[in-house]
Image (cartoon, rainbow, N blue to C red; front, side, top):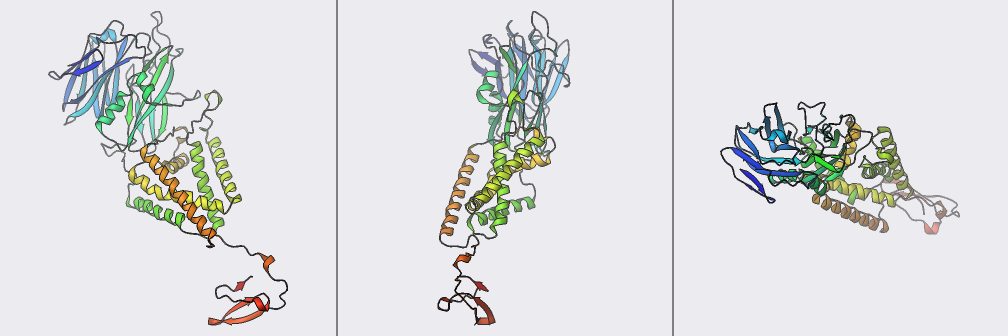
Length: 491
């Protein structure tokens, strides 16, 4: 039995039944109220959910079931039977049907499954999530659908219906419901049940969603019913949509993804899936050490290549939020042509600036890129997100439809520490290379200053060096010196 009294939640199980009492429903909360319980569902059995004492001010409820493995939710009354399966599922139920409706949550696994059962309750002025459904199987569909690929997370929803006005239902084509979308990340590589449930709880009611989650930019030119997100495997994220009509709002059933399937083999959570990819990742570390700490020549070619790479990284950092909103809410960087023109302009500008300020720009480029190459394998090992500076750029080039994907990678404690380490490595490399340059180390090729050649010299002198190596010398007799390493020596 689950009872909710004076804001406190206590629970007691009784013969496979769970009872939820709404006698403490607060009608002053215009954005809904949540009641929930964390429990363990028995294997291969149905758990009955009973709702008691629904108040007269209650318009409808959304009964939800959340777990890291698939469950089945069934509502049955004299009018219809609704059935839905998944990990984040929910069904809408009118208040007048609550008393006569049987609600079952089924765990068809051969093991017990931890689950969160929740009810969100709303008054008569709240819009009904999924009330204008045209595509999903269930007439009123307050839940969301998630499709997972190797690069993206695609979430579909159905439009909400406006509340009754003077007892009349507004046509779905003419209602004035508006939408906002929110996302909440968990810590990276955290697959714990408690973290999963606590994240879902933070996304049950409108007020909690606004308090805890981050709002996702929307476009007036694109439907909010489908959102595409860049996938970040091993990082949990919860998504929810809020429907608003007038001064009242309601929340859809939150949906959760790790960007992979850690509890099945459908989409692996491993970053590096083959031995070759692991070897290549490790080799990047040695390349970074060489680039950061060891002097170089042929710096013109090196400067151009590193400038392009630096420009790519800087371009990504500037444009990573490719949902940058222009006037009237138009997303100017969703268009591929516009994006690549701006991106190429940034890369070209960086290359030109670095060439103008050579050789200092070469030092900065080598330090910056070399330090990034050093932290990249570390990033893969600890499971942070800096690698997506490169991955998301590659996805934009190779993945069809990625131009509409919402980027916004997580930036958490691991990412902060790696970023600090990146900056410190780069600064140390700059210091070492400038010190070598000042000490006369041949970091860059020297140019011949022909003004220093003595014009008074009237004749060449040829001398024989060991191993019969001829040396051509130009200068006064009194200042002539020899060298064993160069065929021509200017003084």
